Image (cartoon, rainbow, N blue to C red; front, side, top):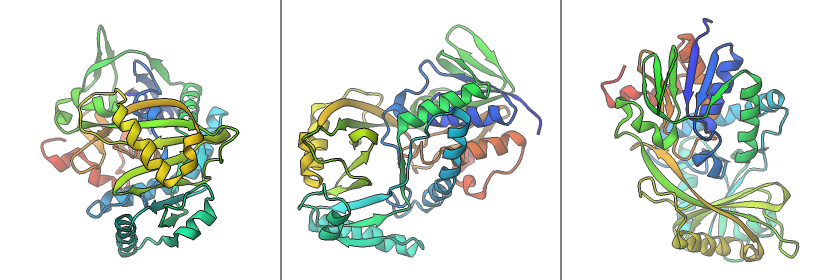
Length: 369
């Protein structure tokens, strides 16, 4: 494999995964970001849940997410070895729950859809759900057990990715990119020349290249980080998510009694302020699922911007000679990191990436090469 000078623009989970794997493969790599490991990746819940998040009409995303999930255990082991730090991977699985008859009907529809796609989940009564997770309350009417859907502590993973990238020789350039073109990344007051630039700047990617302009939009999500106090029930061991009177909510456990509660979803541009209404809704919905959460300590409230496209598929492929896109992963940045890094390495080698990647090619909109 011919080695190249690669500049990755963006220091979230996708950018650092690509930079680490590219440097480990022998490329000279620089990563440009004014604050690596921040942004949406810093705020994320860290769910690795292609089955629980499946939706009719998004079969290509389901297949892509499932393929990446299969790679996560190996990716996590490799990351721990390379960084000397824990990867943050949690293997306990996921429960999808509902609290009223409409929620139960939604879960039945999801189970039926997954069955048609060759995916199986276990339907549970409310009593069976509480037997698995005693901290869940009597309002939970039933659920689906999805043991294959995992989770990762986002901040542990980001710390490991930065350490692994540094150990592999990645040079971090703490600056803001203004434009990317073949052979160069333009910064605020200088230019970094390269052979290949990889745009992985999340919701800000659309401003960096004409082929992405108007294709990627920010979708705001608010999360709360909580911690169980000594007087409170411990958090569930599994990720618990589901509709609460039709509104999505998730609770993702962390080590040492931590719990991430999310996530609202708004189309409000680049606004990252946490709203009182968003916090109110998250707490009210979480109390329906887990009443004891009211005894938890509120540690943090933050908002991030999911980078989204109209079809919810990421953008992964050549925009022009010397410029690759690896961006717009919407809710699935952590989930899709392994398959994205593998695809970028294949493209850098001049190989055809996995067939599943074809659905993410910028050519789906026409006009790009």
